[in-house]
Length: 384
Image (tube, rainbow, N blue to C red; front, side, top):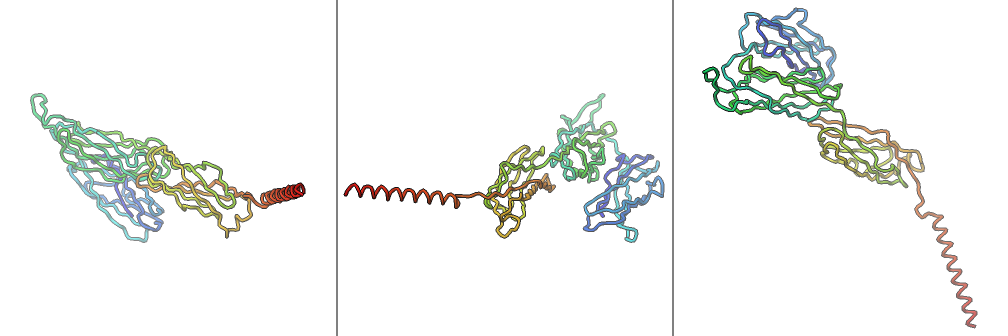
C-alpha cells in the first residue's frame, strides 16, 4: 500500500483550530487487498476529534486502484509555529501487520516586510486535455511582478522580494486527485523572477467531460500577500475514429481494404496504430503504425486482405465475415485503445474470363476459320 496526504485544510494548519487531513491509499502491488484499513496516530500538538475515528476501513482494493479517507484533528492553542510530524499506518487486512509512514505538517506562517507580489503567469497541462482515467501534470509559473529592487511606502523603504512559503494545489471535486504534497519554503523571488511548480494529478475513470477547476493556494510574505488562483483542467473522452472509406468486399478471396482514421480529440495523440482482425483472413501489414496525429487530422490507410485457404468459414461461403479494428494510441503518458467491432466483409465470387467467355471466344474462332475455308474454296472454284 502507498499512503499519501493529498490535502491539508487549512494549509498551513492554524493554531487553535481544526485541521482536515485527506489521506489516500493506493494498491501498488499485483494482488487484490481484501480489507484495507488506515490508522492515524496523532501526537502533540494534534488530537483527534474522537478516538473512535482513529481507524477507518477502506475495504477491498484492486491493484492500481486507490481510495481516500478524511480525518479531523485539532491543533492545540499553545502550539508553536513550525513543522510537526504525524504517523499514518496502513494494513491490507486485520491479520496483517501495520505499515507506518511519517508525514510533516506545517503549522502557522511567518510574516515578512518584503513587498514583492506573486502572480500566476502561466498554466500548462500535460496532456493538454485529459481523458477519463488519465494521469498527468499541471505546471504553474509564479512570477514576482515587482519591477524595482525597493519601494518607498509612507517614507519607509522596503525590498520587493517575494517569498513563497507554501503553494498547494487542491481539487474542488472528487473527480480530480492531486497526487503531490504542497511545496514549502521555495525561497526568494527577486523583482521579475519566476518559478515553475509541477503537480502530478489524476482524473477518475468516471469523470464528467468539461472543465474541472482546481485551486492553487499560495502563502506569501504575509497574510496580505496570500492568494488563491483558479486552475482549469479540461477533460474530454473523444478519441480515434476508424471509418471504412470504400465497400468492404473480398473478391475471389482477395481485397484491398481502405479506412479513414481521424483524431477527434482536442489535442495531439501519439503512437497511433490500427490493427484489423477477422477469422479466416490474413492482413498485410498486420498492424498499420501511423504515429502522431494532430487534432482533427485525417489519415487514410490500406490493408491487403487475403482469405486463408485452410479456413472453413470462407471457401464457397457468401456469408459476411466479422471484422474488428483496434485503434491504440497515447494521450501524454496514458495508453488507450478503442475497438470497432460492428463491421462486415462481404465475400464475392466473380468470373474473370471463365468458361462462358472461353466458349464464346472458341465459337468465334471456329466461325472465322470456317468462313476462311469457305472463301478459300470459292476462290479455288473460280480459278478453275
